[in-house]
Image (cartoon, rainbow, N blue to C red; front, side, top):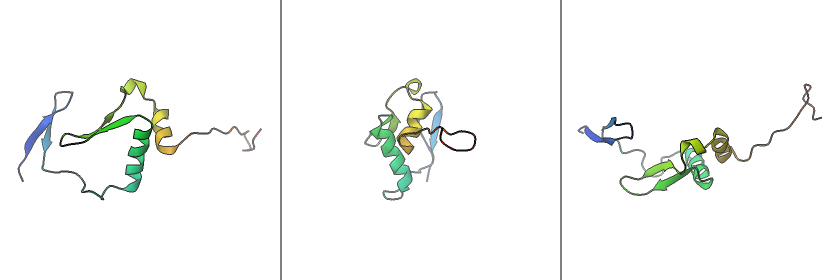
Length: 89
């Protein structure tokens, strides 16, 4: 195995490729894949196939809130009001 330079990222840093190609098909945890699908379904990320493929943000980071990410992964968020004793008013 030899090391090679894989390419530049947007900051100009160079990434060292140690020959690791990532998990083989079927080795990704189901929960991870479910999260990726949720992010795609909500339009937060998009995929690109091929040798240079992967996942990228579908919108600029400024347009994506923490709430958007949590809702995409966990589903709709419902806030229930309670008083100090835990009862609903």
